[in-house]
Length: 260
Image: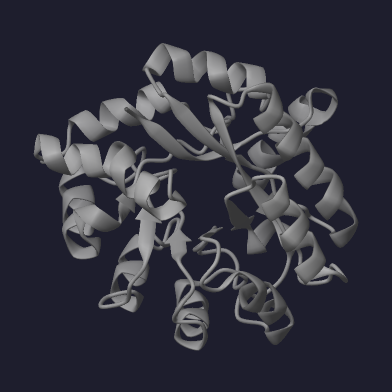
């Protein structure tokens, strides 16, 4: 069993434009088109059984339409995909939207402060954390040396304010700021995913990060459409892990968090 916790998908009519936007934002090549069909094609090829899908609402006006799209994907491919909702601090009815998405079967929340343009520890975002703390896991983009929005230090403050909230720090807790993230989150009960990290960080360093966070707190993620699960799994195979540890990372930790 393999579960990919981190995949972005977009409606077919805007998928290529959205993928191009990611390419421009990060100044990297994005080889995949961002559609759910391409994601599942690559997942099949890699032997991935289930994928957690999400897409950030860059404005509050997009929240419901994005969540409806994610829900539609879960209905079209109920045995393959699990949906996470998007929220935005400026959306007026956070509690109502959380309840609506829970009723639709969405299993968590994804935030990307850099795309959504809010500081993750801004008090205006606390309405989100209050609505989901102790109820739903939060998968959050953390880290980017270019911006202040999602600094690991900011996320650590949020975790102190909401200790009951289950937090998954994407990209080993801090994209491009992996060592800073490891320092800031040391001793905190944070989960991290493997996405958008192993292409840049050597296996020896990845092994160290896994040991710090704990193999029971690391989740496999691809960050489609930037990367694909097959390539990411090849990186996993190069790591110094026992079969039991690999099973934890590839699916058991995610199953435990999501209750599936």
